[in-house]
Image (cartoon, rainbow, N blue to C red; front, side):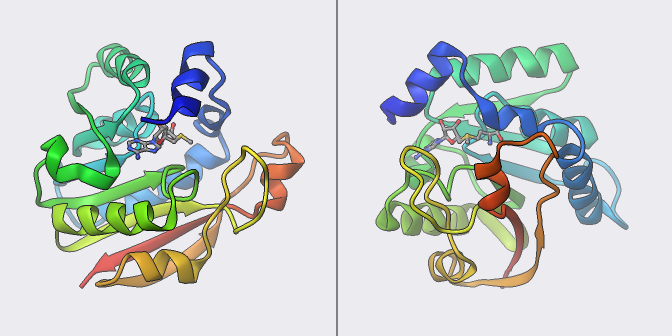
Length: 205
Ligand SMILES: C[S@@+](CC[C@H](N)C(=O)[O-])C[C@H]1O[C@@H](n2cnc3c(N)ncnc32)[C@H](O)[C@@H]1O
């Protein structure tokens, strides 16, 4: 388990959670709505990879998805439990590694997979490939993957990012449907704006 994330959650320094408000929250709501179009709730099983304190897991459950969130930091998962309780929704929260979802026992048949901030951060190239392989095994045919990534760069302890090609290289068997720039909040730090965060949407073939 990552010491860095354990410390960040322990001291309560979780700046990525600031994305859970406009304009990012509105943009993500639009991306979720696109997956729900023409379908009735419950929409299906969704897997939140590196769910952290459950912001997006809870939002998906609130919208009518049957959600499993996986993260390896127990404190983050405790907060996710509280968040789900406060919202009055059910989310299955699993402590495990996204590079070994089989061992975590998350199951399969997920129609929507979300990775908001996990893949592009501290995983090595090999761990990224393993996350992709495990996520693919857990995904239903025709599933959608939504993945947010900063552009690649050297940023010290901040996420190293991932290019479109790097993501595609890991997620073989998935077709890139589209990518869109994240609506970075005007008050976000300069390094976030310069990182050009983007949402990538893939379809499992
Ligand atoms: C930037 S945070 C984003 C959390 C959450 N998606 C959100 O948007 O609030 C990245 C998350 O990925 C988790 N994470 C990183 N590597 C992981 C791994 N190999 N297995 C499980 N979780 C991991 C971290 O613990 C952290 O909660």
